[in-house]
Image 1 (cartoon, one colour):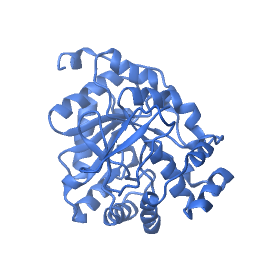
Image 2: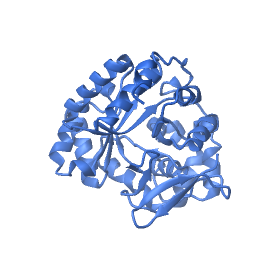
Image 3: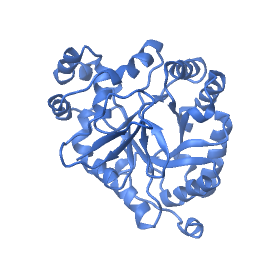
Image 4: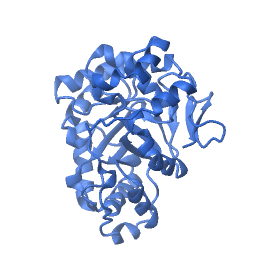
Length: 319
């Protein structure tokens, strides 16, 4: 896979484009305010806070507040996380203008279909206490009707409820189905992405790159499992840069051109993860990390789910 990341100094935007000179993206030493340009003309911060498995209530509320205080300007949640209320409360209480925050949530599997998706979005907007989302993702292709569901997102985008629309855990066949039926490609595909699954994910990464779909990585820090964080491929880079293992893995992802959403509910970790901009990995270090082998077996694998497009007639008439 061939990537490069170019910096637009005037706007601090990062644009991912193919490059024939190097196998990896080269991420300039940017500030957390740097952004990736998306295919739809919008942009998103290169780093955000993820709240997967953050408990509803004080735990999620505090994590989001701390993140915004530390300088994060992107929050990633999902309906199935059951903490959208807490995210919304923290954003409302933060004092950070809504337009300065890039907010993402996801449509759960049980709400696939046109009308169900529209209803689910309205529920999420209410819980988050906002009138629009910066990014709304179909959480997985598991329950099918992906074109029918995608049509609902396109419709809500036209109504101004969504600025960007994307998918999560979509494999190449799912993305190809959207293209086959003449639908616009997603702005983002959020997938499990870390050094140990890089080699097997090269085909979908290349497909996304060629079609202008921004890859957003989850699971970047090996789910915090010491047996992987303490592997020599990681610890050698940790020693070389005086960094933490999380910072090394997050920096690897950034230099690969992936948007990142590290999760933590500890204030010092949330702040620490932003220091990923203080280091830059060499190509040798990138190569070593990218060659890691192992099975995390911590997340689901919907990329191989069967392709079911559902009824495509309703959305077709609206295109």
